[in-house]
Image 1 (tube, rainbow, N blue to C red):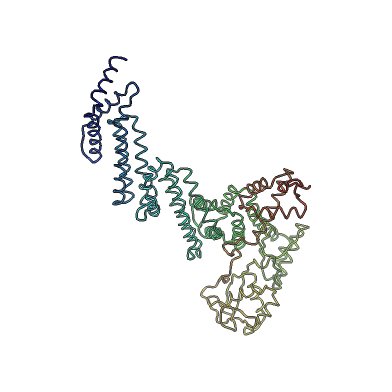
Image 2: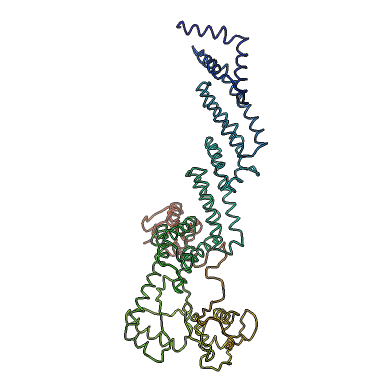
Length: 615
């Protein structure tokens, strides 16, 4: 042993570990540290020398620093911060406590740099994290007056406190999981409250504004307070998906919101504003699991916008389709794009008809008292109900026959069916020599009003006579008659008072009809939209489409594989269909059973959970 080391051993035995020195020196060191923690100034140079001396005495395997000081120091530290944290948290708010913890951690790390041995750092940090963070994690999250949930509610003004909590919890990975779970639970609860608010659900545009504000708020929390971490983003996405997909309410509201944007919201909007709004719509769309329901409802509203010429911007419509295609693939928007193709084709066909000999004959024929503007719809693209066409007025019949002759001559082999339930008309009405008006009405309303031509002004028509003459479906006939009898646009007078129409009611021209405007658009009274359905049910048409799509997917997979196990087939079908909807295993199983009955598939003899494709 070297002389120096021998001297250290002698000093350690004779002085440092002398019975009257050892305990006393340790007490002085711990008292100094406690005093410094309580705000008293101490001689850090002296502390550094004393502790370095203990570290240097650790020769020949002896751990003087650890045994004579560090062990007691760590126990004292644990006790000190356990008591202080309990006391401080009981008397102060959570944000104040977090600031205190941040300060204490900085102080203790500075203490290591100033005079403690470097080997103490990791041990000290574990104790601090356990006593100051882990021990109070649940309280900091759940405390009702100032905990994490309250900070989230007022995140606009508490972002710094939220960031501080996340930074401290990040030092203890187990507690960070609690924080993410709390974020998920809070957002889901707030979202469910919004979805269950009937007053908001009755106003889809306001509902979507609230939903977008909710997303913007908690996106900001994840971005700023959680430093944009991937796991927090995932939990936030799961929270939104949990309440958005609880029923079809959010899907319906999103479609109506887009409809309002396309009809009026984009008037005069700049390109950047349109892009931002569509980006917001797509952000909510990504949360939807049943994207096929969105497609079905969107198609209905798009059809109305295109046929009634209510779109404020065709460019915005195209942008929306491009975004949907980018999210779900070209198959998702094939029919939607086909609707736009039909509109363009119809314009070209109408122009060609007007310049043709038949079109000129149409314009020059005195018996034809109406102009015709036709939109050709491909049956598979448009969400039209197959209703029997009503009986049109004679002048309209002549015009439609002329166009039909032209169209079939140009496109032989095609079938043309008039969809009178979706048309519109502009009528010139003369109630008297001085009362002349232009009415914008539906095709059904035109047929009803045309019945009063060549009659005395005081003639009445029975409901049953109107129904028999026009062959308009009873429910639609009642709706259109009520629209013509409303107080604001009372073109017809109904014999019985009230908002309903009975089969015994009679109707006649209202000679007192005198609106201030010469050109009047007669709106239809509200009725349940085609898209209206119980929010917890999938529309019947969508359910049927799902069944066909699921069966086609199973056949396509089995045709490629020839053989497959039940679980593999279920997994592959789910993977291929998840962009449109998430099929439940029992739904896929029903499709498989149906295909087995129709001999597209069969079960293997040796294993009932194996399927074989039958060519």
